[in-house]
Length: 185
Image (tube, rainbow, N blue to C red; front, side, top):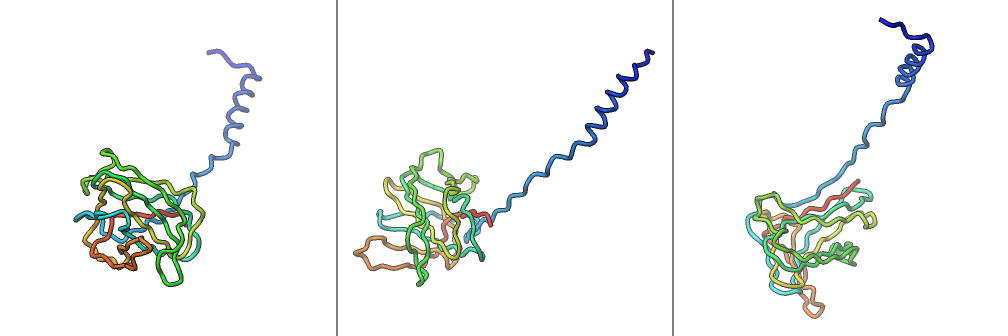
């Protein structure tokens, strides 16, 4: 068995010592999210939109402090175009100014049977932090889209007519849309 030269042994030892002196890799940073919903996660029927002025609105009361919006998700049952708005709240606890609005064209690939776990997801990471109460409104802009809802009477789900000439205010519903708001505390 050949004997390594002293310089080779020192180099090998330096390599082992050098590796032992390397600090451990930092642990992955935990990300915390708050997923807010008022339904029971059991689709029992759908919500349709009889006209473009008809809006389904869900009220979300965030825990104290500011929260960064991450995602909004819902389950779609039929294709069509939807506009979704996230509203600030007024002092009278009604939807106020729109903080964010986007339109989605729901295709066959986006649709769920209410039990398959398929969700339409919108990234909200570009929004500014939110706090207090926010409202999420959904209404159709084309076609005949429907979204899944549960039979839970949450006290947080309403319908309204957005036509300014129509005085109909917020009316509570007996169904709560399967709608999730995800935020980072």
